[in-house]
Length: 196
Image (cartoon, rainbow, N blue to C red):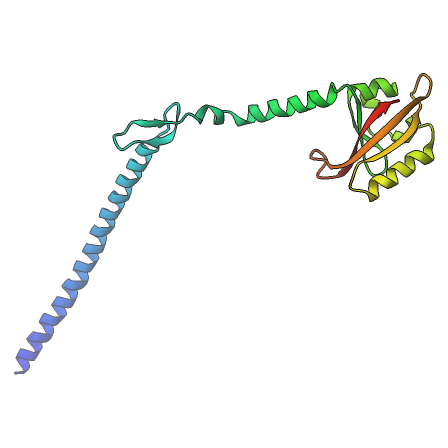
């Protein structure tokens, strides 16, 4: 009887051992199968998403690429954006009206070509200079600046400009607050200067 119990215990121990060994082998085998399945899957994904000229990486079930009519518009958005920016810069620079942008203190931040002619200084000398240098009546300009700071709408003021060379010019300043994209969101006052 004891012998039978001992034999049953040995058989049970062997079954447990073989079960453990089989479990290890199965796990190893399954891992290899999973790895090869993952490799096969990756290869098929790479093949499916391989970019061909003129496609956006999409293919039909039969393997033919799907060509999009919109693809040429997205080929080089950077150059399109640069071209649009250049168009707006040209519109600003070559506008028939003098445009000046100044900050809260009244310093000139931007000026177009007509403004440089009207004020009699080149652009590099205008930028960073107080606009008050070119105004005949300083009190009127300071009041204009104050109205610009307190109003969210267009502010208009008639005053006399004194260009660097030449006689005084009666002018109308039309200022509107804008947020500068080039100066980290600083508040500027874009001003159209119309000689009267």
